Image 1 (cartoon, helix red, strand yellow):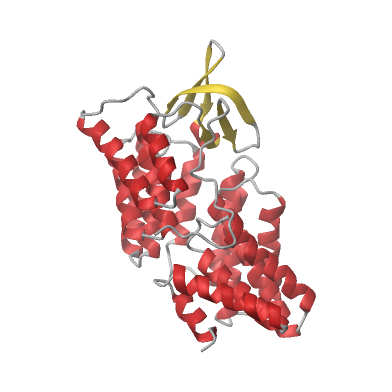
Image 2: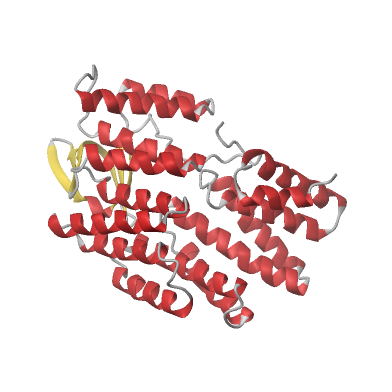
Length: 370
């Protein structure tokens, strides 16, 4: 079942508007409007602007929305509107399989098959099904090696493998990605992305050494690859909080360091949804820790706001949402009044009902009323 929160605010990552022409959203904040996508290639996205055919480097494309899609895309979106994510996955997957096998009845848009395959990855990620996400990413790598989704598919596969408990497999996937980067002379961005992922999937690299490596990558990304830089900044903040939990250094200093990184991303939000969810979740963690220690109601309310933002705005980010819902409940509990206490129970119930396969479900169970 698709995770549908009482809070609402279903993330729009996979929802495509149908009332406008194609739009290309770029990493520098520019939006190319009223265009028609021709091809989403590994190095360039080709589009028509009126009668003229133009290109934008694939590495600079954050996302694209489409006006004219294959009929089956509409069928899949209808399933998503009904919260039937498994059926949507099936529709997209059947379409891709038909294309790959040469049995497709409909193939008007050159960009559509790889796009559909990539949407399947995102849908499995939204459900938190890591093995399925890794398998789907592998299909993108195998079947669409010339699409702009190839680099992200490698990273998605490694990410799913790592969070599924197989760091060795993740490192192997990233080594293969590095070979592709070198052999196909991909842009500097993907080299930085790969190096970043290698750090994030290396549990032996911790503490200040981990953050030093991340800081170097953030500096390398700079303003040219802002989305990569922001991902590294969030990872630096998360590393500082991990050190706080492990008591590797001054709690006050580590929390302040982490909060600085998270707020930098929030203030300049050129980032993917996972990165933004991580930034708001991390900010909530920092504020909650400070508020709980000092009994600061103002800080507690700010922490609650960050946690609820993740749950409402980034509800597809299954890595962060259960934790944020749980800590939203803790914030409400610490407020002490009856209304807040009831809201806390609502948060715990959602975690328990929607995310039973996560550690946060057990945490929530401990705070539910008997």
